[in-house]
Amino acid sequence: MPPESYGSNRAAANLSYLQAEAERVLTEQTVEMIIYPEDDTVIREIPEGTLLTVLAAAASEKQEWLLVRMRDLRSPSNIIGWVEQGKTLAYDDSMKDQLASPVLLPAGTVVYPSSDDGKILWDSAQTQNTDAFGTVLRREDDYLLLALTGGEEVWAASDTVQAGNP
Image (cartoon, rainbow, N blue to C red; front, side, top):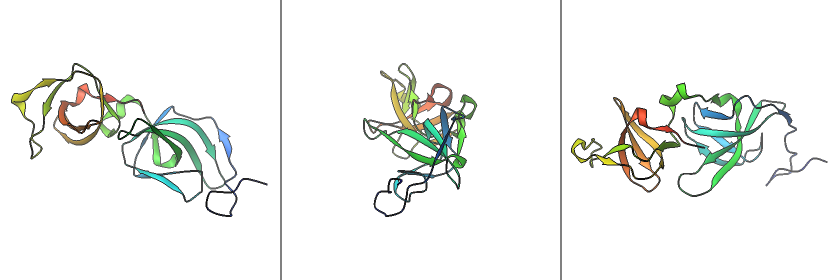
């Protein structure tokens, strides 16, 4: 008898495991991360432009799924769950302009503080002392406004920011 889904009396989806086509995927829209394919238990909504690490791929009777790991920038933990494969794209560096989170701001990068109204403070350039992860809040010309894990918001040239390790 198959295992039961958490919180219900229905059987879990019958899965056939597949070879994953990509090691990392990018969400192309907001997607729901769920506990198990075809279960309604949502772990978290994942915003568009989020980079995910693929751990496994599977197919149910209705669709294909990816077991993914997502870096949680608000805590030292990672989140693992299933997403619909059709709502993701295999990631490569040519897609960097679509990436929103997580991004890596390498040590040694020149950054600019953000004013209260979100403008770049050009005369207050600083050098990033350590590697920092963050999320892209806004894009303006060739610069990105980043919210770093410590809560600081800084501007950095878009060509200095890298895809973070999800």
